[in-house]
Image 1 (cartoon, rainbow, N blue to C red):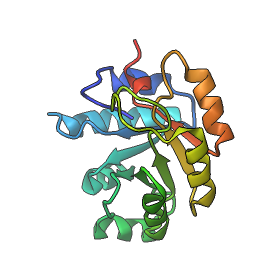
Image 2: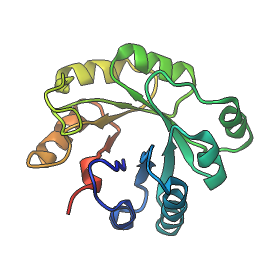
Image 3: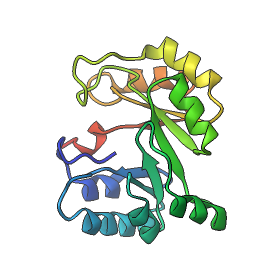
Image 4: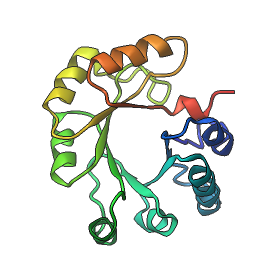
Length: 180
C-alpha cells in the first residue's frame, strides 16, 4: 500500500515486487495522483502485478484497475456495473472487525484487509487485534482475509508466519513501500 506520508518511492517499490503481487495506490491527497497512478499501472502491467486504486472508482476504471475502499464505503454504481461487465475487476475493503467483514462479504468484495494485526507505525499506540482475535474473525468471515498492520520491521518474518497461521490468505504492508 502506498502512503505519501510514510515516504518511499512507489514506482521503485512496485518494480521490486514479485509477479502476482499487488499494489494499492493510496496517495489520496497528493498532487499528481493520476500521473502516479498511470505510471504504476504501466509497471504493474509489465511486471504481472495487480493494481488497485483506493477510494476513486473513476480513476480505477480508467486504468483498468481494481478498487480498494475504506471500511464503511460502498462501491459506486459505475464500479458495480463495470464488475458485472468484466471479469477480474477486483474490489477490496479495509476492515477492523467482524461487522466490517460481514459487510464486505455482503457487498461482494473479493478480499478484506483486516487490521491492525500487530502494532503499526501508521497508528502508534493504537489497539491491535493480535493473532487469536484475527484468527477468530478470519475463520468466521465469508470472504478471504488479508493481514495488515505490523508486518514490516524487525519482526517481519515472525509476524508474517503468525498471520498465515491465523488464516490470512495474503499480506499487506504500508512500510514495505517506505523501506530504503
